[in-house]
Image (cartoon, rainbow, N blue to C red):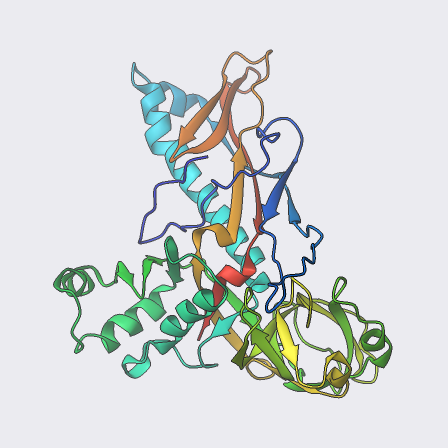
Length: 403
């Protein structure tokens, strides 16, 4: 699918265009399979071949969340306000287009709210708006994180709420920048491009809330799972203690002492700790319980994504650090590659028995427009329907920009 036209002042740059499963056509079936590239270990100082089994990963997108807007036009509106040869044009311009704009706004909000917590990389300082005092290093560090995960350097995008954008514009006003961008910032109040990415202003970006009693440091307490660890299965659930009564919120980002990030291809250790995001919280009793997280911990094999001195056994009793403070609320904007996220869209089918049922397209998005009459009350009924699905296909190609 083609991407919708981007509006830097309000439209997300998450694009519904990645279709790796040719069997999906938007009407037959409700799943889309996304194939991720293989990862391999590299042989060195040996002429002996060591064939590796294929480890292609497939993530599945369920395409099936319906959205719609329902309208009715009264007898008087039909006769006077919407009468004449241009009635359909009036309905389209005055009613349908604003309804579609509101519908897309809701879809964007839902996608950002659902997908951002799945991004485990994060830069920024808790409770400090990016750009304060001219400090925009969080954006440069986010770009660096994508580079460190072998992300292509094209098609990078930034989503910023207006307060963050305004703070950056104000903080950068005394710094030399390309004249076109300085003029845009002065005249329009926003930047259009910087740090290798196209910038978009979007009030729908996600805000994350930490639990009210969440302790920001906890400890790994799961000797059994650690002892049973294999590189193939990895670890995506662990028991922790000293967490507080409620544990962390889903979407909270944390690090584990001693567990360092690595280059996805060379497996060379980076100087920073691997970041994780909470995906599920089990029952917490006595400040102890199971936490599921992403990415899966793997310290060896072709899918290795972190390393720890002393091997996986040394993970037991290591302390964790949660981003932010108890009860903290943090706006979390995004720096990401276009292919980090997948969005698909289709219109429901046109029904044969309906004379005024059609599919309309706006900015490459498909909607079913269905009109019918209420003969009892002399009304015109109109409904807009569409279907959306989304997933985070490459979370390592995205990074939260937290305030």
